[in-house]
Image (cartoon, rainbow, N blue to C red; front, side, top):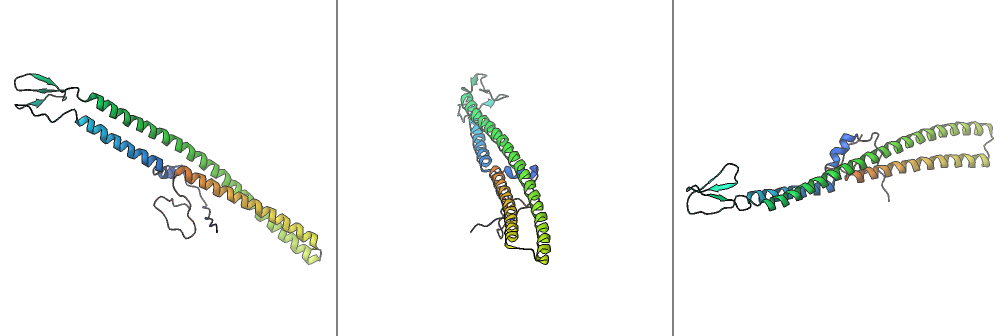
Length: 208
């Protein structure tokens, strides 16, 4: 049994879709990777100041590049862990660039999916209005023919054929709209439509 959701009257504006896009699984994973790389970089930076135990007291010079002993002898801080910091910073930058590229790609996909949905919904409404107009016209014609006693089997079959074809075209247009909604949901990485009786989810969008 296939349960078909009701079609909303309005399509979410771009600003709403972008807010939904923030929770796209790909972006959530990349943000977590970025946070991990940020913590790794901080650890490498802290390694610039190893916990060394010298014989006498000492102090850090401004900038933390050297340790000064009481005798005035300057001791370099080894290599200040510059290689480790550079490697960690490179990893963080790469993840950040990957995140930006993914955001840009998803935004383009969302824009395209939404534009397609707008076109399909307009087409569906146009077909629906024409079908309703045609059915009203046919009903009026049938009433006239029946009243005149001229509604034969051939005329009845022709009426049924025209109504069936019109309704089939309307159903096809509705199916195209549903598919467009599905593609928009895939682009956003979150559900946008709700099935009848389905409770609202944190990731769903309230659409009128």
